[in-house]
Image 1: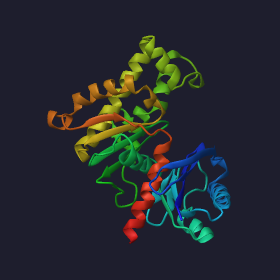
Image 2: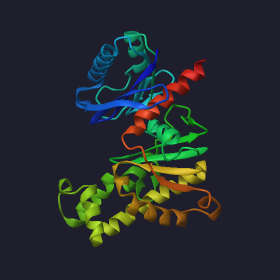
Image 3: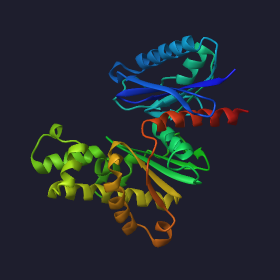
Length: 302
């Protein structure tokens, strides 16, 4: 009987779902609103409903061999439990995903943080494939990160390694200086306009028209990113850095700018042995990473 895996990637806005084959191939995918404001218990019950629907569709023709969860929040990946969460998902801390799912369905379940899953996905199937060590950042409202060494995620003592958005760089917190939301905030302020009128897409449209303010603020963003990245390079010495997030749709503009600044902050021996790449999997990274994490955890138990 063919094995199938059900993967889900829980974000603050959308939850993505996928049915995967034995080798991680995506057979079908869809997404639904997370409705995060309704809290952790609602999301848990909603996911259980989706699992029941998948089991009904399979009807014994294939074996659902595992449930692979990628989720926002800090995760104890051993217990499969949320140990810290921001206000975007109320009452999410303490959600016992692994225990709840395995009790309800008697199917193995493994859980990992979404940024770490994105890193695992890119390392195994995307831009980082074939490397021995990879630093992965997602740049959006904030900045998240993961470090993968020989296929294993580095978690740290309290499962909170690579919460790099909180890192301090000149000017303040990394994610307050180098995120997409920081770029939008600064451009709107200098233009004397409401933030709601600006987003990343509009800023890059103006960059292509050589708007002075947008060009200056984009350069400021790239420099702030390069400072944080240089610190991480000195700490971890990765073979490659993979940058993801919606802003990286503009990789042709961003990568040369970031790399130019990064070289200013790195000594030659580090710069010469580090590659800077854009993520290639898009919305599939978290789903595929959740699958990889599931397989890693199951092998660790054998």
